[in-house]
Length: 447
Image 1: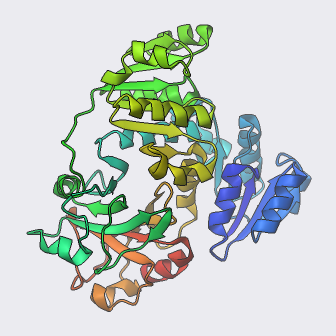
Image 2 (image 1 turned 180 degrees about the vertical axis):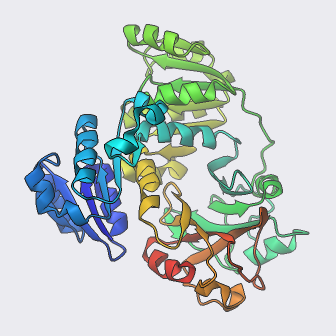
Image 3 (image 1 turned 180 degrees about the horizontal axis):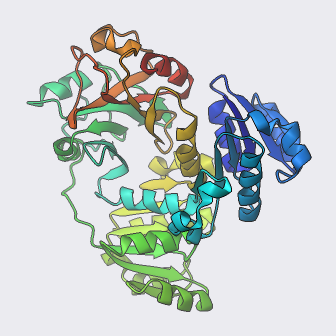
């Protein structure tokens, strides 16, 4: 596949990095020489210096034979213009990154497809959707649903004196009457472990499971020693685009307070968010947070434009007994720190956008793709074909790499946690976790 990426910033670079694990031809366009130089040294990509709206630059990148053109520069206008031009010059599919929410809310009326844009994405909106998903349960640090919740990916900390402490995966499965979950990954001291039968759960492990709906409660009760806590009150720090989107989504279910420093912006947000209590104040003011009832808050979401402020304010929230904290960070390397410093979950809007875009590049009829924050693995959902290699043997006899786990299957609308004697059939939907270097091998089994 020939993929052209306009914009060598964080989104463009991470997209190219993921694609570098496979045999795609990647061309990166940017005006900044230093960004292109860094990308060419780190990745197997072709770089083209210049404006992505230039006909000569696009022709130099051979846009006429591009399978996918992705415009993810910092400029919304550039992205829209570039995607339209690229489509008219022959690119088969185009994706543009936008910030203006009207493009998302009214994309049907705008007929963007007729203009030449196949898909638009907003990292801010995607981050808000991720935040809402993370607030489904206090004990869950990561969450992603497959087929409207028939299967779920969840992350949970292994607590001291929990049922799972010191048990192997085999011993844990013997404690269950039925198979309602599979352990698919463990994050231990910033190292990703793809577990197998005799892997042992240890205290402070961050374990990830694919679970049936009834398996979610089972996982939480076995991994945690804390009582279940229902979320009711949420505090959002920062009136950024992510903060506004998150507050709007969350106000449909929770009581939401939003703290913003800028006075004029507070008035705008109060009009825009009628179901949210908007408060003017300095997010670094601990006294203000306490006056506004941070100790009575169930979840604290810090989404200002400053990563360090977000992290520190979440630590303040934890110190005030807030059950759930989420921090938005710009630096991807910070995500690995979350389990060590006390913030429940750190998210990066650019990485979330990369995962969303990445679905368009997969083979083997992949219908979903997500990554786990801080874990070096991808979670993919495949549709099994009649000719797929995966259907030839029982699961225990399929020679999948050690860095691959089949977490769950959906067959004719029914979710299944597969065991060794399971055999795939055509039209099954398989949820698979694997390390990036094994994606290509996995695709061969499902294509």
